Length: 523
Image (cartoon, rainbow, N blue to C red; front, side, top):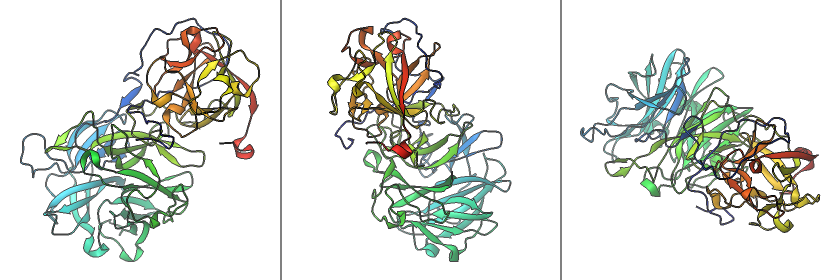
């Protein structure tokens, strides 16, 4: 895929863990750019996909002991059994949110109110019980009605006892799958819908029936796969749109609306009411596919020990595919939610599935440690600041070091953008420091480019042991480096794997503090 500037999105992305930025000092340790190790290890990072078998429509909940439990749509058995013998809601568990173990099936036998496949489970803990709403797809597809059922268990690993259908197409008019349970103000509610509108209605106290007179529409016919949660004054509604199940050509993606009112209206980042959308992919995607991982969507939200929000979802993997009866499997993914200054979630850092990310529970999504402002960013080895070559103002102009002369091309607006990450905007051009085409290569010369939120434009300040910082790219995991440890004016600024050399150590000198809420920004 390409962004609006016709630049290639990377096929691989990495999200490197920040250790935090403290005092910005001036001392350093010698070194050279010849020790290459670009890939973070499993002690600090996890890799998508998390579970390499068929696990669509994941739902997640954490028990009181701290263990996470995830549940997925039916999948064909891979042990040679008859194709009609599907897993009756597979269950995974994890103590850390990234290493997952298969536990078994939620049901001992198929729910009996209609013979069909069990889809899109939704798990919650309510009033001392594990509560699962699930969808049934009738067989054959040409007959019967879709509906949502209820099952409960005393333990997260089941077996779940089925209580039958709660609501169905005959009552609702269609699209009655993909339930999502929320207790609001002490009253139980269920969201549901699939390309015939997303609705919410009150449930009875025992959760076994619904109250049709309370039904309200919250999103249009473009959507299915609802997820609803509350954060900082807003209710957020995640919805899936596009095609989910056609293999690598699927167009699934995730959109979001929010509202201060539980019942809506849910408004997307463009200011549009989600109820107005009636075509697939009509709105603004907060998670969309990339070259390797097509069709991400239909997931759930959880919060880790550090207070970070995470989205579990399914997607395809072109490079590490599993197949079910010759069809690519939808596999289990995890990505962190980052938040804009005005409270909109961005999934995966650049709205696409990540290949690898910092481990959950690390607590790297807090406020930025470097105050927003304009800085001179000076190399410890040469004593010279980072600058745009020839004070250029065009996309693609290169970055060099040069003796300080006070020019705006040597000054950088540093702004925290969430998740412990920053953008570095040149004061002369108001373009962002960028790794061309998301390159992962050591020695890639840095450039400037108009800000477009890509991970290759996001940086982390990591405190060294001498009070200096290294500046690490979100996408590649490499740090800003002066090529060949040069002392010369005009020496290239590149990215290189961290090796501790002085040419990779930097100091920040604050020139001017600017409050973007009052002074504004020119981009």
